[in-house]
Length: 208
Image (tube, rainbow, N blue to C red; front, side):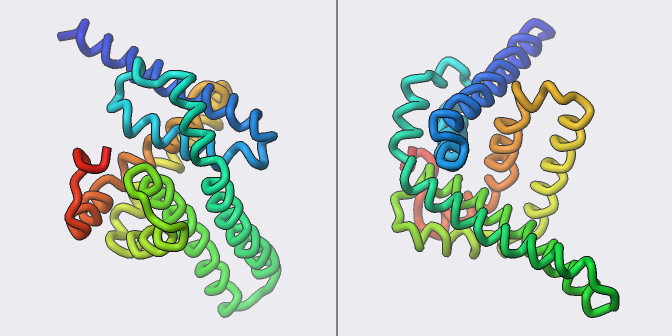
């Protein structure tokens, strides 16, 4: 029993490390700016397809997925980053103002940024499972955000926890942080994605 548990822990740990190193490698291949988006999608795809089997995660598969999603994932990533930058800049201006109205605006902008992050996580997951036009995936992601606020808080708690642990152990930035964030997003949003699959008359076996 102990041996099996240790073996599984090793496999999961190596999967996390492997995916994180792939993320860094392919982000650099895209000169960071044009590498992060497809690298995030690549890690998500590999994780969902691997089912925690690190042997299924290979450099060849990673490159094929990264190349396949390069243009579209960059479009999605840069779109969300652009919107996030506008919201963040407005938040920066708003926090410098005094008064209840501005305080309420601060809160709205912070929530909007969080919901935008959640929507992007759905976009990444839906890109793995569906063949949809760019705009349709974006629409489906934003609709999914409002299916369950429990999922929102679940995802947020995981992100904060991973961020806190990384702050305490900076080495995780190289070996685990990004893959953990992406893997947690896939796990945390699974319940809502299953609901969407059911509404669309699909199941995971048909989509993989």
